[in-house]
Amino acid sequence: MAADPNRFLNRAAEAKRSSKRVELVERFDPRAPGAWLDLVRDVAALANSGGGVVVLGGDVEEEQLHEELARYAEPEFEAFELHDINRAGRPTTAIVVDGVANTPLVFTRTGRYGSANGDEHVAFARGGLYFRHGARSEPATGADVRDFIKRQLDATRTQWLANIRQVMHAPDGAEVAVIETAERDDEGRPTLIRLTTDPHAPLYGQVDPDRSHPYRQKEVIREVNARLGGAVVNAFDVLSARRVHAISEETRPEFVHVPKFGSPQYSDAFVDWLVGEHGRDADFFPRAKAKYLATRPRRRASTAR
Image 1: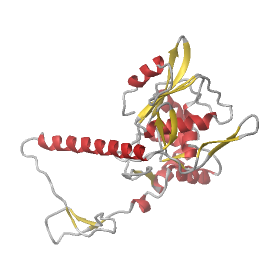
Image 2 (image 1 turned 90 degrees about the horizontal axis):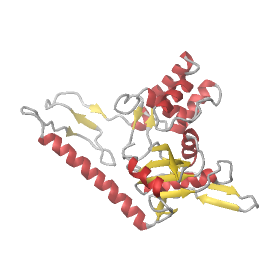
Image 3 (image 1 turned 180 degrees about the vertical axis):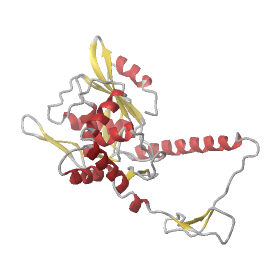
Image 4 (image 1 turned 90 degrees about the vertical axis):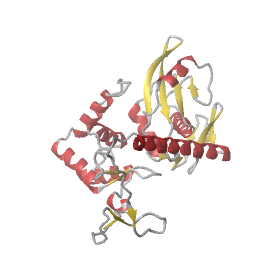
């Protein structure tokens, strides 16, 4: 996680009531109608609001939470950790949630459930964008959107200043290269770039990431399962494989592309790699999951499939 979880864990241990940064759920029963939907809504609202912690009087598996988030919200969101804490001498689960980067979490399907007496409830609507309003997770207002944009601009400004400092502290003899762009597309992006001052050098066209990396995570899972002949992998399996094998845009750009706004995109080569690894080792995904869970702050989750 980008943020220090301790600042939220202290609040989780001491909070007396829910607030903008803390959601207290005294009793969490994963089998109760709507329990997972309410939890997904609160995690999304905290992430969109800059981060916080959900305190649960009950147990929850990290893998299941990943699956529920992947089922109901986009873009992909992995920036949370589960911790076991004590509140008033009782074991409690704390889910520390980091703030989203660039793009807010939006619900892609309606979270609807029926209560024990037959009444229908809607935890969130398709297309809904939720933020924290005091102690509640509620649909976004104009002020929420403005605050979100401001946080993103502040983060971008901080990154710019860090880049400027790198240039200012460059060693003697270092040079800054300026790349001349040629044609641009309808959105203003360069379609051709020249990496030399030689006007006779060849031009190289921009690679369209929608063609080179056409899959979102859900489509990767669907494609892998289709090639393997059945429902074999889920979102947490893919996450575990990526983490254990250090697959990111920086390390394996041929596998992953991360747009400025939106979910990561994956290539056919990544799908081929997952299928190939499973072909070489039928326990590839269970092993990856076990290794990944062993690195997490909370290690009680079962690794059985």
